[in-house]
Length: 227
Image (tube, rainbow, N blue to C red; front, side, top):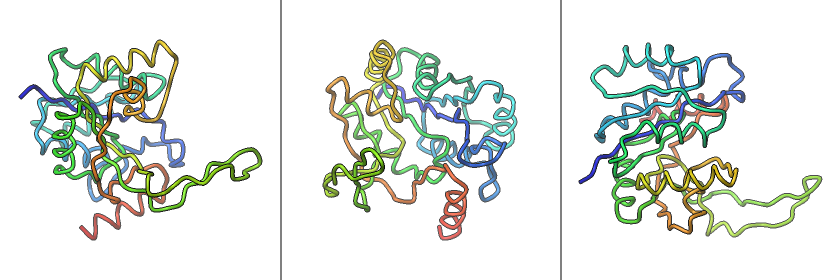
């Protein structure tokens, strides 16, 4: 078995949270949001974790790691201007001998270790895999003035989550091509898809929410109370 590393994206600006503090550092059931995610990853286990944070926030995250994650091999680096730039910087911080890289949002605190393990297992076979859940709502494509242009078939739609796991060299190539083309998306699987490489969907949990708005924090606290 080759080495497996995690790359945790935590460089977002948290503009939709309406707070001055990075959302990944907000307290959730006694721990910062990002710590929940890191502890789930550390339970897998992995060969190392790269935590990509906003420029100027490394010290804040180091303080959190010293308090909650002692004994876990985590390297903190500064991210770039976009998510794609931040992930690319994280990839450059990994050893070139890495086999797999697990990309996870630091704002998804409720990820379960068993889901990470299954996504890794599928990525070993397919080269690329991502957690996802079937869409529950009907999705419509809007045109100008908010008028419906198309209604998509719900039974073929999946809501993509993280972690997303890839063969290391495959993800590096996907990011290289995207940088040359000036192509930017909100998830790494889309970059791999542009190479015409298959991406395996792994059934996840609807509880694996991403903290984006204040309402998400309310829901996350309720889910943890029920767990």
